[in-house]
Image 1 (cartoon, rainbow, N blue to C red):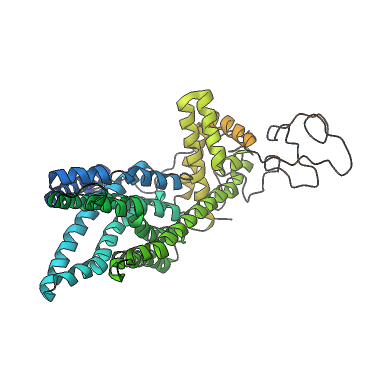
Image 2: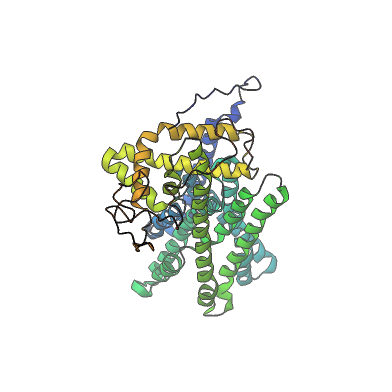
Length: 469
């Protein structure tokens, strides 16, 4: 196994200067936290004023039910290359506080202005729900996606990242909106004396929490797909990078308007739009995200063999890191034999290796940036420091999840031996043991015994050209 070469400390090209006080990270984080906290207090006061204290508590208790399920679903989609929790926390807080505050203030002002100008409150409410609300709400939620795209670019690498960031933002927005609607419905029931299944609260809960908890995430995910497609575009396609997010935002506004305007289609308009459009759209987007995740796993299997040839990874690791089942088996094996620290080291190893594969893919396509070599070196060092805990677990996972080979008698009539059709030789380090025999010569070689592919350069630390395919 090759040893890690010494890493020279990069020297700055220009003398380091101290940043201005507003450029310091703690100033930016402090300003952002203060903004979100103030927005949360204001939105809390507004919602409590409209629903009352009891209505607010009831709405809060009912609105929180779908939140863990939605966040867990988006986190599951992001398991290949999981982003940091701080991004998700920011997105949820932005959707629940800042975006909700912008939507309540802007929608109320626009609806009152239309009602005053037209002297028709009924048409003002309809116009506000179908035109004003989609534009304001989707723009407010898209602001969080834009901020992560601009200031956390390393964590925003593709469509799945856009879907997760947009979906968590919309989940926070729907959480606050559900508190308002459910609290108002509870107040109505208190005035009319209704209760049970026939109450307005039960009907609102069924429509907003049971039938359509994915409505707001579905709208904003379209914006996230636009930003994710822009992240995959090369740096020279500036027009495409600008038009893709805008197209996703406009599509999200259109779908949102169709959903809000479904009540205008008659008594059964809501159910017709739900069955004919929302459910198929949700299924299509779910399939797209899962298909994209499988492509990401394929990228891991295709890019990491370059580091196998250089000695940084073992031959079994690209297969194990490109399979979610093998990753899970590796973490379980590490936890069983090394405890929580070993399992955490394996999980970090998997995350760094996946990020390394994505970085290499962007580098071959010309979109990795000028710091490609530095970032690659950082990830390789992180892998090397965790290799003692990760490699045995990944090797075990690769052998455990190896696809079985059908036990068919060879055409030349040799009998089976102890470990396969070729006699009693024990299996190699990356071959499946009995009862899975080795591949006969006429079949495709196993991914564990196949020779490492040739790469343009022998060492990833000193490539002649980092963008060379």
